[in-house]
Image 1: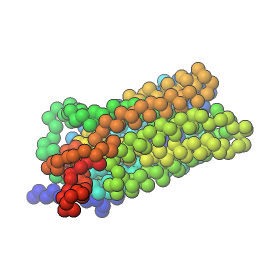
Image 2: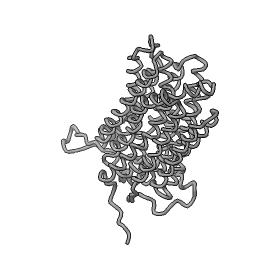
Image 3: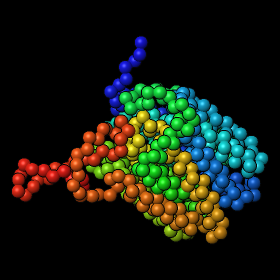
Image 4: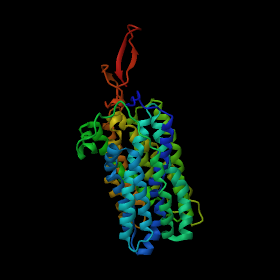
Amino acid sequence: MTTPKPTGPPDGGWGWVVAAAGFAVNGLSYGVLRSLGLAFPDFAEYFDRNTQETAWVSALALAVQQAASPVGSALSTRWGARPVVMVGGILTSLGFVFSAFAHSLLHLYLGLGVLAGSGWALVFAPALGTVSRYFSRRRVLAVGLALTGNGASSLLLAPALQLLLDNFGWRGSLLLLGAVTLHLTPCGALLRPLALPGDPLALPRSPLAALGLGLFRHRAFLVLTLGTALVGVGYFIPYVHLAPHALDRGLGGYGAALVVAAAAVGDIGARLLCGWLADQGWVPLPRLLTVFGALTGLGLLAVGLVPVVGNEDSWGGPLLAAAGVYGLSAGSYAPLIFCVLPELVGIGNVVQATGLVMLLLSLGGLLGPPLSGFLRDETGDFTASFLTCGSFVLSGSFVYLGLPKALPSCRPASRPGTPPPEMGELLPVPQVALLSPGDPHSTLDTTC
């Protein structure tokens, strides 16, 4: 007996459990990676390397995680998200345990960069894509809730990791993080499969089809991925160098952790608030994406321009404020980049599209941290790093202007027979009725 397909996403029920699992997955991936920068000075001192060389640890982890995300999406399309995420949790944990016994920086590159990065590649896109599949009307709020795991994890892990480093050193800290990231496996077990009307009738016949490369035939998807690649160069810099930047500005270890926590608090609140705002439908998602992307770039510029703090006992008010502004803008941007995908490519392709977006982010993620470290080594501080990377984010936001509805327009438009976005069509065109001066009952179809 076959189970009948539902008429659409349930918009609740078990979907909230899936959103909670996505929350934990996000916290145990990007949240851990964001806080890991606190250990970089210890890495540099122990292995006698400079900032640029230690930055490659996180750069490789980001690059592998995002470049291999289409593989995670393809495996999820073939075998389902549940087993893929569970295996990814095991790989991530093994990467941290292996790195705890490192005797050279190369071991950290392999353990944290390649092995843990590969595990994260198998968990993020399938989990986030599954959350999108469970929701329609409240999709942005649900995805925003799942993505708050990043900020919540940073808020808790930043001071906790500093405490671990002070008491157990970087080896003991990595070993304990290996135990923590193993919890990705039970999170994967909660991702119950869901059949939807927009799903493909048959499995992809070739690996290229499973990766979803045909999605690049959509012009809007091309614009989105190009802009996202540019944004990725600067977006992840605070994950790696916000804490070292705070140390360079004169703050102590716990002061730097407080700056990371301030960015995390802004990140958490913004993801939920932006999710609620976007679900109201008052402003098109591409327009919100463009605005908050630009604000993220301006936030990075503000972080880079903060003056030096007088002493280590200072709480660093200006840097705390700038980090909070960055957290608010970056947190608002994050759910939008994934929630615009179902409207561009359809709900049946959202897992593959998520993986491809992560792949394009990896190009920036690979370039950004080493570029930031290089500029720091050349100039003596992170000012040029944050200014340069903020400029990349602003450039990517400018590219987003090519998306449908990113710019307001008022022009005559016909009413096309556009199917709902769940069925794979591009953004539907809302219709606005205007009264004619001559006839109170006549209307003019326009797009505004």
